[in-house]
Length: 469
Image 1 (cartoon, rainbow, N blue to C red):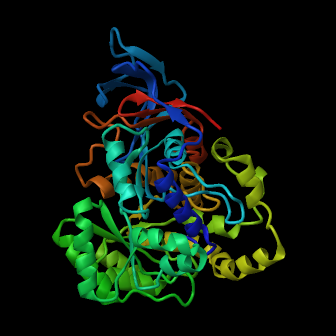
Image 2: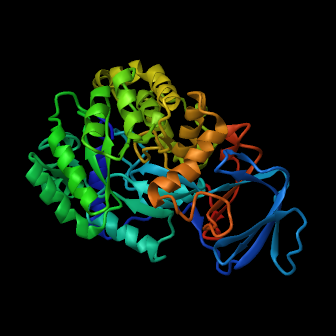
Image 3: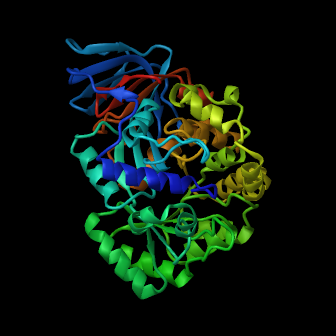
């Protein structure tokens, strides 16, 4: 979430959708009418997520009734099966994005472009992201959407949801929204997007009230994203974590600075939803995170996107971004509407700009200390497009020194196990696993940009029909 008012526009979109009973938009994928229940892809390179490398030679992968049935030697008899030629291509597990906001918009605050939630969801699938965690949305609407997805009523990635963000009274994102939402919307949006808790007792009660919705994780905002915002007390975060853990629910923390990471980990959270983004992470913070075995969702890309607001060069964006983004949104991201907005954002963006190199060094320091790095895009937010932002994040992790195979393992196996536990039935290409798969042209372990050259995407063994914008 950003300081530029995007969250307010996201909330307004959510309110409009709730009142108008749904949002449409471009469908980036559709389901075929009669998909074959069993098929084989021949002579394909297979990514072994456990070992972060390709299996030796070409393989035949057989899929039956939505599951991977076998990984066999090339040329294995498979009479009567629909066949796909995988020569020169690589088969990957479907990507898993563990930090999204599915009801957001990638347009800048000054460009009126209310997003379509269904469009965003299909854009993730178009980009090969077959599972997402929504890390903050209007409640209970996000849980209803999650249940519709699980019931097969909505074409979308497998959806996990946190629901509202827990925060201090007036803390992020509440303070920002109160300053930007019209009075007639505040009464609706604020109690649905956040839970403001001032004491441990209030925190425990608020968690208990949310649990009947079966949140997949609970998210707490520890960062003062807008300088001067109230910060949630560490003992309150500890109360949230303790009450959630009693019911088997994990807690993730939005953090910004080294002190936030230390406080959140000390309070018992299970993951950090950002790396330290505006400064060099302290040695104490690294040691604290590593000692507690807390994974970190790096999200380099979202802060780079904030840096580029008003200055983005549309011709510089990735190929898959061009396939997903509205040209008008890219154009709006490239120019400020006036000097007042330029000056306002200059103040907000300075610490983020100053932290550009540190964000990459911080990932390297955490990795060297043995911290598990997870992959999340924080899309959909200004400048960060659904699905495309995930591929940009992979490229930035490699830029930060993470080997491509390791980044791919994080984006598949590690992310899947974070969401589904050690017995997750997705995130690997192995017999019995869910056939959420992505076929790309080239070898992404040698060139991470190959993940963007998507040829086919399958969700539970059904090939999605892809429609670029």
